[in-house]
View 1: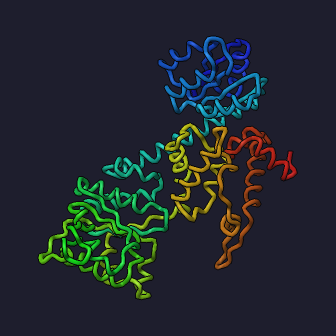
View 2 (view 1 turned 60 degrees about the vertical axis):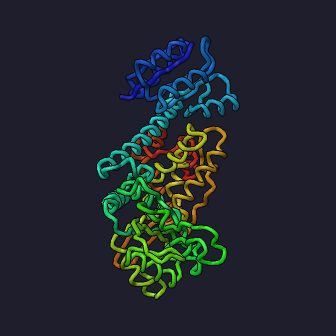
View 3 (view 1 turned 30 degrees about the vertical axis):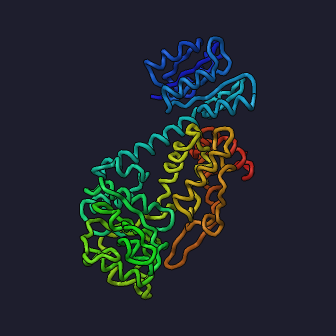
Length: 454
């Protein structure tokens, strides 16, 4: 049962709020007219939401807000005041308040603010639990893969495969578009393998030239060529007993592909200037955003090297194919920012979820970092998200398929029909409709007005 605490030094206001909330069906209600007693109350009980007056004798509401968020970060706090002060609003939001209300308050305003706060809390909790529970049920070492944030079934299957491959020494090929997290997965494979105590050495294969390949990869001994004034360890030696991560392998020249194949086949290498080969005791993990199978057909990638790599092939899906992970990732990036108390407005969440993300997780991370800086009031709205929906991708959705004929209708039409049907089904109750649709009440008012509906 949802537990709610109302803190205000005016008893008449406390009684009024309790009465309004009881009418809306909330029963587990607690009140405090003395703010100094609240810390002791919090030691005995936690609350889902707190209505908190800003100006009270004995303890300032902002100070109490700070205490509440420290003791119970998941508690959603809604500030109440008799004065509409923008600086005060900004300060409260930065301290972790979810919303801010100015007296007098109508029952509709009260319940709408509470419903939105609780809905956000339920969303974050369900996303967190879904991700943690699914990972715990799928993986033997979920903590190692915790950096790959997902609750997506397809992704969890892929992580399970990655963990299984990690137990052997066969080469692994990771494919996927730019920004999907190929190196992050490669590191997780290393960390869950028997080689985890040795080095993980990433190599950008694009930076290698054929003339420097042997020296960079195998190393060289002093005097082996002009300028070799001391021994140098190559990537192979640096990754001894560990993992060598070959990034952008699809962009290698055919000449370097042949040299790499020999290493994989023979399992040994010889430093430049040395006379004896040495065993290559390491694990190879390769990654590319290229379609290697197509490149083989076009004779741009060696067939024998591709066959050597393809048996442990892990393909990371683009973010647009795992949209259910987008809110989870966005909240994680906010949590890891300098303003962890920041939160997403529901309309911002919708915009993030509907965007195509051509740059995938890397792009989402950049967008969230920038939006955290731009959101001065502690709430990230669509205004702070510097992304644009492409009309060719996002504005149409298939609705009817007959044989080979597919008809489309604009997204606005689909949205309009869905909103009006929901509004009618709920007896034209705007608060309930906004709650069910997961949008703000003002947003619903604006849309209904645009549709010519009251």
